[in-house]
Image (cartoon, rainbow, N blue to C red):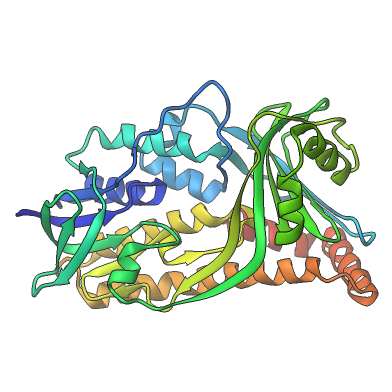
Length: 385
């Protein structure tokens, strides 16, 4: 049986970040269990799954030695939001808070590939397999994989996403909110540039987000009720392009859809416990939020930073429950606040009765015209608060 100090189930961005953080600061033996390719190759064209990386996450990735290894990233210095059903708008700018930028739009594959490159200089072992079962032992956990390879570890990390196998096998309960929506994603090219700005348009029945990948290309995240989403998915590429261009008032001219339009259901999940003895959940395994603000992976990186700091600064044995509890206490409030904020924003913009439309527009303009309020929301969004 192979024995490790730490076994991480899930070799995506968050799982690899935790492995790298621990490998650089400790002598722990570490294995990552990942059934898929942990080092995606970047093609000539942009991938459709992207993240809006905040300056705080940028600093974290820089500390890990990953930031400069990310092969392509596009900076944004402004965020503009406008509402179809009211007079409201919000305009955030890095210059307002003496920042150089608000963040970067980066393909998830580009981040993960850079993580893998950094891990090549460590002794972290990748095991290409699926987790079948786990058993609690006096020292930690014993794992059985689908390749019949048994493993044991002192600390088990669940970094295996929203449908976490680790969470299920350890019987950690979770709450779930099904928004009855889908996020429709694709990449587009525009006639006009995106001005290093992320754009969001709130329509009466959906929300369109445009995240710039280059001067004239952007990733689209169109959050829509299931019925509308299914209708949009049935359109031809040209018909979809026309609907999308009209949805943002042809502000960028006519769009060209660059790849297959895809969709995934929007479901918010929150684990009732982030930790048990000798086990911790991080990233989407612990909390999976609405993609409205593109904050999911930033929360995951904050989990990694907090958990690795708690483990590295403690003199107690690896996997000690009190140390893991300190991580859970430190992260739960921030994660749940972001989840509830996203759920609340989704509800506010989904409801379209006249009084609420007026109040929505009034609130947006109040924030937009009050530098203190606007600075508060901007610092929260960039992780500076």
